[in-house]
Length: 138
Image (tube, rainbow, N blue to C red):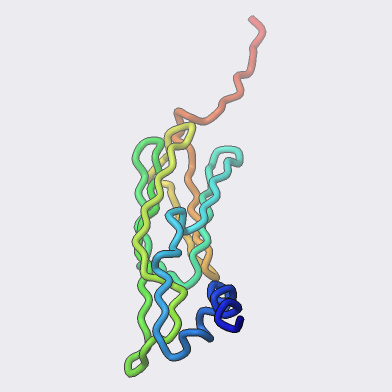
């Protein structure tokens, strides 16, 4: 009876069952990482990526026409002299590409990283911006 209970418990308490053995969670890394949201506000798009633990050198951002690409790599290493016993954060390379509804002014793109959140402001190209035309009486 006890062995049946242990098998039932296994998925929930694998660390206890394998105490002292390294656990690698690389298989659980999502293909949609980091989580990204793209919004539109007036004459700009804003891309926000949740990427805790990554630094500014871990990202590469490129813009071509109406396509923005965010790529990079998350590296995970134990401090020197330490051996990992549980590893739930796996090393991962990522590349996400988004096609926007209009072209982007690549020269005006700005990216900031604070508290694990990457923000990329993507201004619309001048020819893509909405214009208001004033009607003049003749």
